[in-house]
Length: 317
Ligand code: FAD
Image (cartoon, rainbow, N blue to C red; front, top):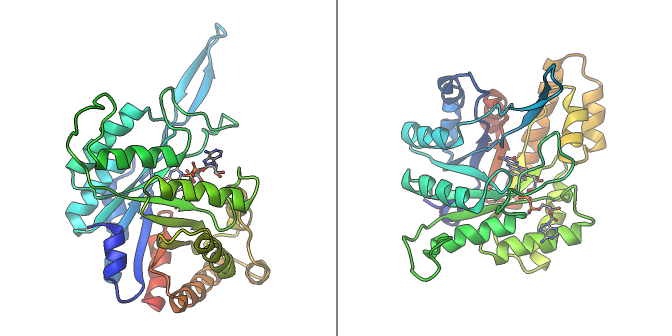
């Protein structure tokens, strides 16, 4: 079923979450066993991230540079199939502009539709670590709004090299990313909101936010999005902090602020166990306030730590 239908039919806030494919060489069974307890909270859908190919250069004695792929988390499509098969829950694969030509995107969407995927989260993706700016593939999309356009085109039977005939029509429900604290490249939040509007105008059905730790940021964001005339559901993304290093890494990686109260509590922690307890409690309080506010679903970034999400959800759902 479509994410938007789950949200429309729900009479209370739902529970959903995102997982990462395991590192290459690690087993899928461990991942699936790890998330199995989360089925207690009846997630209608599970997001599966996509990780584009990364690479490094190896210098040979003759001076030549060899480009070596270091992609570490393949398997998004296979995991989606496994989730739907094992848990009878809808899987939402993330789909990137980066690393894909339009033709490859078209083929990936056909694969996804044929295995029964009904929802995708359309994203631009980031530049590989060795590159400073995002550069689209030759004949690929530059922005997520263009990817949304392609997906919606296929929903109307439009394929790349067959402009005249209406082909098989897919029926994807499309989610896009939103940034309560602004996307790091956007010169202002208003600029970013206009680009969010472009994704909705292209046909996106719902928005999932970047993680945030101060609910007020989400409330303000919702207000601004609504004022801009966008009425799509805005799903809040939450992540319980689990390690002290995340105090530095999360703001650096995701371009967000940690509230002073949270930082003060974390700074008093003597061990990672203390940090985890503070992180879980913070996420519980955030979740409870967001439910009161009436959010459609609480979407947890498990980052392969399903046990932490379980502890939060047990107190909230
Ligand atoms: P876009 O919406 O295309 O925006 C990117 C930037 O370009 C923004 O600053 C925007 O303001 C600007 N912009 C947009 N359109 C235009 C235009 N026409 N002209 C000028 N500027 C424009 N990354 C992964 O690699 N894999 C994942 O699985 C993944 N999952 C994610 C899930 C969520 C919920 C979120 C919030 C992020 C996720 N990301 C993932 C990260 C995401 O790929 C990055 O944040 C990326 O930098 C931006 O993606 P986007 O879809 O928001 O891009």
